[in-house]
Length: 460
Image 1 (tube, rainbow, N blue to C red):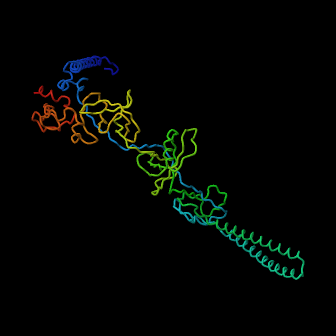
Image 2 (spheres, rainbow, N blue to C red):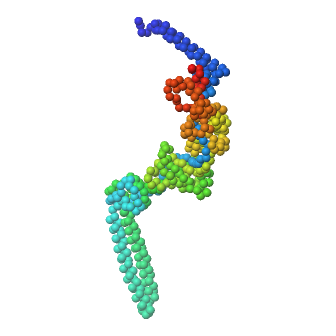
Image 3 (cartoon, rainbow, N blue to C red):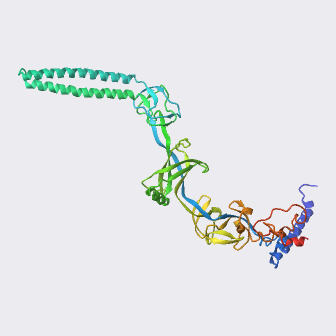
């Protein structure tokens, strides 16, 4: 037999297609009989029909399990978010102010230094020679000045005796003044030479942390070097720059003009871990016309040095805080009527339109539409409808068994034959009712689940 001949496979393939068509027809008939027909019948929504059927109307009347939260007064914070860049409070490139051979480096890369600490030493011999020369010239001119002053005293005595002319006395006085001026110039030359000599000791101008060095020991450095020897960044304190849209600037200015200090909180790049807390220090004097934003700067102590210059962080600026009614943000829904919530009262849910305010994390302020103490659905809203019944699972994160009876469904404590928390008839069809095992935990608040109460007699 050739492997390319498909003739022997045709009967078997046709037989399988026939069985597939038969199975689809049987499934469609069962769906119509048990689902559509029972849903359209008068008893289609009864618990018994829900227990037998599996069509679209099987769970139409069943209570929906939900989780509730209580409307209460909470502190809602007005927080503005932005992305910021950490900048050093001061940055200094250490350069040499004189030229010469770099004899020694007195720092380690990454070291923290204080203002005035010795960083490097340049060969001082050339500058020491210049200082000695200036001092020698100063002493020479000082001796001439001393001699000129004594001659002036003699000339004045001779002039009073009419021994010499007045002109000779005046010439001697001019010479003394000339030498006194030379004395001042000599002192300035000595000071200049001493200053140049002091520049051979390079010290830290500010306190901060050193970066990587740019030159090595033994190199010739000059005052015109642009890279310098090393860079010092002041990281304690440190600042963060960020921008805000111009529409949000008005709220910030209102608080600053009232004399309030605004707190700034920094989070890491993933916006998970808190890095530091500081305060807003300044705002720019103009808005960037290309982006429509305003630059702001905040200050942080950075005692643990977790912030590094040029680091990207998430900024949260706390503008104000106010106590007001709030609900979990998960409870607020948005539809054609605007913002609304599902309010549960005695196990019955209804749609309540609200006016939502600011969102603070997982909380949303409610300006109108709710009162303190009401309970709203935070989980299970996808199957709710106005006027439907619910099965309360928890209230404010606590199990419904510990919640007040008002938060439970219409069947709570009603059909239990004196037993709290559930209906005895709702468990008639279970193994416990038939004597087959321990009774399961009662269902709180939502009435009997599908296939419980009226399905039990049919099973017996």
